[in-house]
Figure 1 (cartoon, one colour):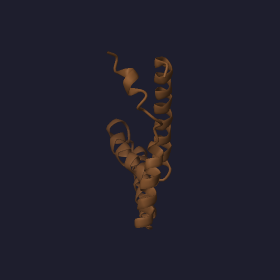
Figure 2 (spheres, helix red, strand yellow):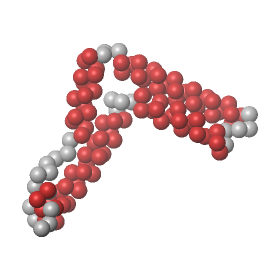
Figure 3 (cartoon, rainbow, N blue to C red):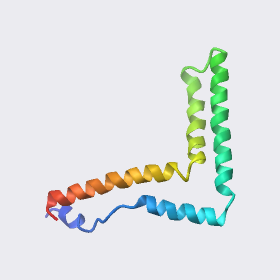
Figure 4 (spheres, rainbow, N blue to C red):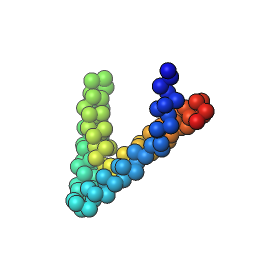
Length: 111
């Protein structure tokens, strides 16, 4: 017995972005200053990492092993800077891909 045709009709539209929007609205309502605080911390991390990288590069370093601290501060800093933009964008892309896969599976199984 093939399990795919039974599982595909149960699959509906994927809406991860909608769920995140609800969570982020609740966070904004409960803690009105939190988005600004996260943005400030994120900007400080990104600017600090870039200044450190530029300083190390000027002193002749910043190559090879010097790039690890750069990425270690840039990625969390970027995530903190834009939870209202970055997460919805990535989740929207994931929704789009998942919904295309579901539609392809439905078309392939004839349901």
